[in-house]
Length: 247
Image 1 (tube, rainbow, N blue to C red):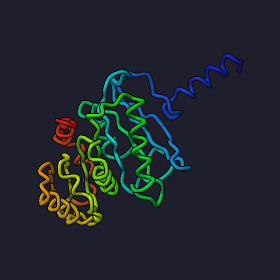
Image 2 (cartoon, rainbow, N blue to C red):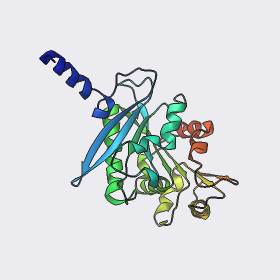
Image 3 (cartoon, rainbow, N blue to C red):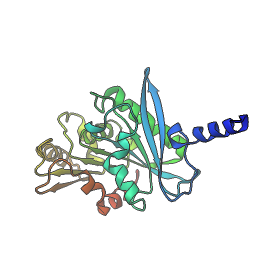
């Protein structure tokens, strides 16, 4: 193989999405871009999903999506299979947004340094890909639902809206800060993994504190794994993108 060919092959490999470079914008399919970030000496993988038609220079909505316990690891790929990412690929017209898909390490949760990593990944994505800071959203399923609720309570001024599905909200002190932030919680009435009482209790807490921006949908007869049902519901994406900070 000649030197020119070697240079060409190296350039092609460096330009693939898994090498951390976006594909050529304006295609017919969304693109996953592999990324990593070191926080306090620990390196974490994450992915950025660029929607079809993405072009630099535009101001895009950005969704930070936190996965459930099953997607924990260090491979960087499993968060791409969570239901929000799948819904964005199936219905790109409903999710014209950049997705930030961090991965939680094994045996950890979306708290402490891991939560700080997720926020830093979001911040870098907003800067690198031209995110609209008035349209930054949180979405989480199961363990990720708890994570996004806690992040929103810590930094309610940073987010336009939150979708939380099948979450456990045992640590409720401080969650009253959510009362003015648009929040849509979902839970299956027959959930045997996380009791539906978790969402009901948080709903009552927020309502009693004047949280008139909270919505709650309980799905009769359904269990824990309602994530596809939620994110494939057109009403969810319509509601989400209707929210803006300062609106």
